[in-house]
Length: 397
Length: 145
Image (cartoon, rainbow over all chains, first blue to last red; front, top):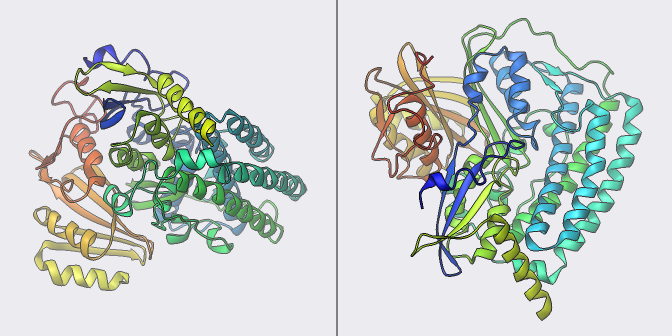
């Protein structure tokens, strides 16, 4: 089958970014090989960035991903501030970390919901997305936007978190914590979820190192890398928290890491709010005259892993070169290890397990027969297949 | 291994292939090397010193084509940029993808966008355009309009 007959079906989703096409080559039920095509909607952000001023680039990179829309401005700010040796105020650091961690909570909840949906647990899907709403409400209260928060700028943040808002934030966070308990209990104690996710889509420690995987994908395989700890930035060195890891490397371990990370995020935000109380309101910016020539490396731990920005400045008001690496870029390549040898039903959740930036990646998955090269199943069919497997398991437990 | 001892080790091991070392601070170092030694230097960093390959950034500048290979030492937060300057007319360098898979996509991307040739790459197909762009047109080069 030629590629041209596939392209019009799925990868173009006008509402979403970075469409990709996955081709699973199967022998009967078993996935033997996986190939992907990407770039259907290449936006050339790196090139565009060279034509924008430093202030404008924040709005540009925020639009790389809708879900982790603060991670890219975070990394870009770190890179530019490194070029200019700019030290931001403590208050701005706390605000940045609050936004970063709220984003992690809403992103992980979104993933848990989608994972539940793929497994046929639509209750988990409904719960997770329902409990995500108050987090988005918090974003709206703090930044004015439910998404694409426009909070970052070189030298600080654009909006303050006033003291009057802090009690409301704490109340909502307490509520989110209770709901997270409920959700964690539902996922961790369910025998069917154990049966569907344990030993499935295993990524070994060596695979992680070989592919350079990052974030929960790496941490679930026992590789304890987290930029917030390794290369501290913003308020992360000012608060107490721990890096969550698991050893198994399967889908369950990835879910476990994400669920437990939400508690760490809540704790970080609470400590940051306390920190905000000790700083002066309104002290959120330092004045920047110009960005000198030089090179800056900015890293930020997005919900999916390390976001990497490399900025070269020639002393003008826009970057001379701006390289961006999102975490899914390295995590998606691990499918070559985690999906091969799986059944089609398990491949669906293995693909979802790295949280491949769902507004970026989950576009079209097609199962092919390896002998005849004929398409046997599309993405919807695969999810249906996965749901069927769960119902079969439920009958037997 | 701390930052200084890694720099010393690189100088001691690769001698004349290390052209320049700039240490901005404990966590940011740029080492310019002779492009011919990229495989040996990367092998040392990845296999002996325990660095993780993050990504590589290509640049088109007056000097020609430059690549910064970003390596991370995760337990110290050190980002080591291994910098090479390639020929203006015929930019090519050994591929690292036979050593680790992490560089496979980015080398394909640099080949596609900048026209840099990666020798012995296992599969140097186009990554982004899937053959929809004209051959020999490299959109990230400065002359591209």
